[in-house]
Image 1 (cartoon, one colour):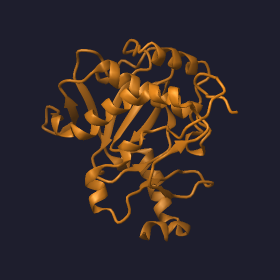
Image 2: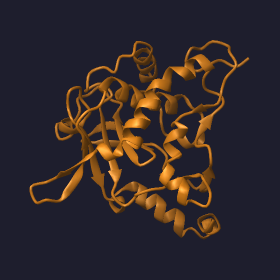
Image 3: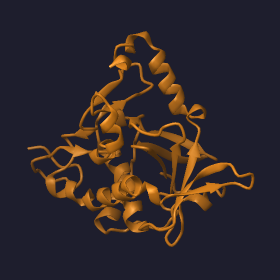
Length: 251
């Protein structure tokens, strides 16, 4: 019998969604889409665009007991980031230009542990889509935090959020990857309409980012990104322009 990658016990394993399925079952998208599916796009030559109607899952990860550890965090994050999107307020700069959005209230403990659990799940998964996420000793730190329901200090696994101005509906997911910001290591993930960056580094968060990382008793900010200025845009453009993918983008 295989071992659960969380508790390391020999138990039957269940279908585990690395990124919760609910984030890719957005009602507005499904009403207008000819096929209720999630589009997966990567910049790897070995990975062709594909549609997965049930999202990304791994059947070699967790037993049922360990999979259930993430449920309350998944439920909370989905309700906040998707069902309660209308609660966001617009943030503008001194020139009146939109720089992002924010929530006035959120549960730091539940939301931070959601992001930490996504990082852990991706790091433990052998799925090709998450191959760039490697955690080393941070995996055990994340397990302990989840077991203790400890979201840690804002500096520990610091998280900040963003969204693409051009993507109004319809989830397209790009593979998580490492990004160095002022020399500090962050992984970034696309979850539905939201992008989150999470620090995997013992060094301090760059001072320019500290005001926007999630913190208790603070506003929850989401930066507005221009898709054309991101790596995701380059991946999307190369994928669409590739003649071998023409059939995919006509369906």
